[in-house]
Length: 586
Picture (tube, rainbow, N blue to C red):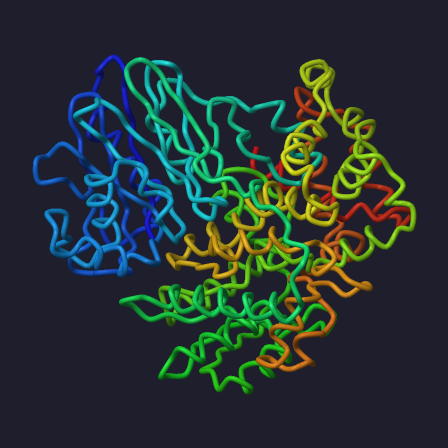
């Protein structure tokens, strides 16, 4: 786990060493153990290292023996042991136990075709001096971030936007179209960022940068999966358990102490249960608790911890964490209206006192229809009668934060004029259009995998974990599990109102019915209530400051939104959170 950064200047201009060092320093939290930089005229690749695999021998960048190929990566290749064994005894044999050296040797042997062999989470930069080309690669679903800024002359890249900024020739400006989409989704959907000059390399994509230009392509496509209809439930359950068990086993590889987040929900309990199978020592588990039982999952976590005999650490914390919000936004480089970033930071902070690596249950809800919203939406009796466009628009509206009219009313005239004719539904439609062969449950899940998961839910453990220099690993997002999930028909995920239908049947023998079928509880805090009471002044301060930005927003509709919430005539919690997040970012 690390952070990477660098640049490729097509005119051959070289950035000052101080600038390159500033790029690394900006993301030192991602890798405080070591910094390595390769540089030559017009090119540099750097790495901030959090030493997890081959602590002594894993210094980056890795450079080929002839000096022609340079590799840095952020992330982990979980099957690096098997890949290194395949290379042993050949002229491409590895000399260290580092997974990054495996990337170098595979590229030497196979070129970029090696990507299909990787089981991991990664953002990779490869400079090939023979071609005069820089390659950038992002993992299949975007567990690891990778941002780029390309003005046609110089391309700068980094694991976080803050690593890119020192390498730019001019300051960035707010992206008004990204703001428009943020107000729809409550996060900025890739490839947009709130910096007009910066873009996110899409998940499952690679990019080649040369003096002649830039070429990007998709190297992995979840939309290619086709549902398999004629299989028994027992067959699906057997495959589920086999894939997830091996995904957990691979992700337990570490040369430093590791553990898991444990909420007592079905996802984290399943991961911990499988870890216990593969560990000779008690698994270390971590959770935080609140005094308010509506939001406190710690009793369920303790039940799971006892079941699997873990070394469990629970810390009761004050649910009012809003003092952490500016820090969280700073680490994200963009606004996120999801308040659960804050408790995620606190549990990461707790785990970092004991371990460097944690396994998490992220991805299970999006793959297997775990959110209550799916049960509610698909229970509507008229869905089957809808044509495709109407169905897609209805689901899109159900996940949208602000409707079109409200969103435009909030905007200052210049912003409204700039985004006139831009429809955020077009972003959703582009994903829906890729899976006409899937049933409608899987179409909704596919959309959420591409937007919600990569745009928000994976940002949370990455940024909040990296803020305290801890690595989060996600077994559910093993590529074999993702491909399996979209070979499974949707009616086996959501059946008779039961979310994660086959998944729960598969894991109930492991974690018990009480944990498998307990009601889902969101990892959040009651800010909506606070905004009406003791934190109404806090809320008003931020919304009014945002309203003063007459270049971006209209004051009157913001005040109306705020006052209706405080008066209790409307519940605008999510809308107010998004606006406060924008204010923190600005």
